[in-house]
Amino acid sequence: MSLLDVGKLVIVILTPTLVGTAVVYAPRLWARIARAWPDRADREPQPLGPPIEQLAADLRRLLRLHDELMRSAHAAMLAHRVWAVEAAIGVRAVEAAQALDVPHRKPGTPGDLTRAELVALLHGLAEAGLVLPAAIRHFTKDGRL
Image: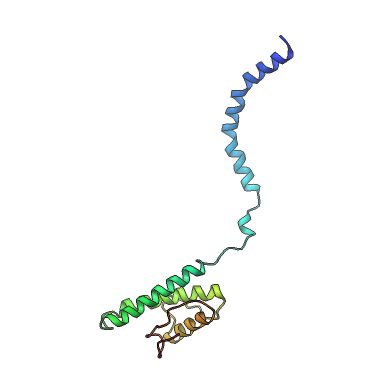
């Protein structure tokens, strides 16, 4: 029996043991390496909220819904729903203002913005380049932003 034959025999005998050891200990080793590796998420800037495209689409949808509600039926019957839509518009407008660096007052609770503050915020967003519906009659006197 030559040295080469002995080497082959040792490889054949040790291979199942080495494979089994790798299966058992590899997850622990990878977990330890992952904990020791510096986290890349801490180094890269993270967005503060949803993408500006999503914010703009939500604002346009909510503004159209508000306009439809104000036109559809008696305002007293729709008061709660109109308030809820205006609160949602305010939340999305504040998020968009943060994303576009438009100066604004951050309300304590949703719906805390007055109508004048909401109108000023919508005008600021439009001036910053956010595309909003051209006719929002119940937020402005002349029906334009």
